[in-house]
Length: 237
Ligand SMILES: O=C1O[C@H](COP(=O)(O)O)[C@@H](O)[C@H](O)[C@H]1O
Image (cartoon, rainbow, N blue to C red; front, side, top):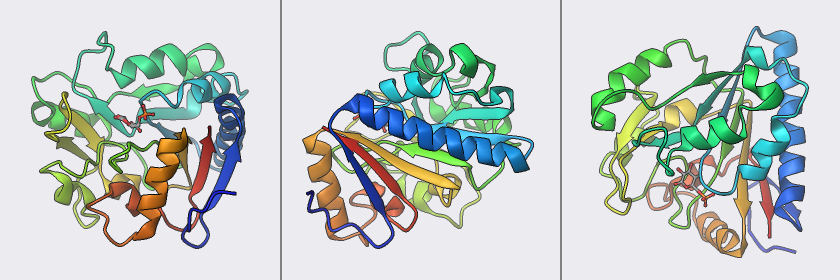
């Protein structure tokens, strides 16, 4: 149906509506978290911001998990106060950390400081106990091929993609973006127990097609770093 030329062992699931994709993704995420909590004291869940995840958050928050043992954090954040409309933390608190999921432990990537570079040490301290690899990672993607805040035009991109670096967070200042950002690095995002890419709309499908055309050029489209075996793509119109 969709000619994507996906790399080997990448699975794509196509849905007619965003609601259908959200329900299927929430089921898959809840299953992975529940399995992890059977064998580990805690589980990590990394989610993305933007507009796509809203129905997924609404479905996932109702799942009967032992949420008090789940650490929730964002893959990236805009360096804005929590009451700003652009705050991904606000999005997560208002839409995911409600009902049963309000028991989860939220680890914010936004700390005091005028810039992400100023707040970096405090964020690193807040994430010091985070166990890698992550258990569950839900990524989004922009039409420039960015994921998390790994933007093609960010001067900090090389460092953030360097899996030999010890850094798990990086400040990002892409000229294309009105807000400064902080992102989990590729080292932190790599090799999660379950990684999904959640997409909505035909434009995202075209971007994914372009990304699949040459996965070796990661800096041109950083989403390519995740187009590898095990990735599950959840797309809806
Ligand atoms: O800037 C961002 O954009 C992407 C995609 O957002 P969407 O609105 O197209 O769903 C998102 O994955 C990322 O976390 C966010 O900071």
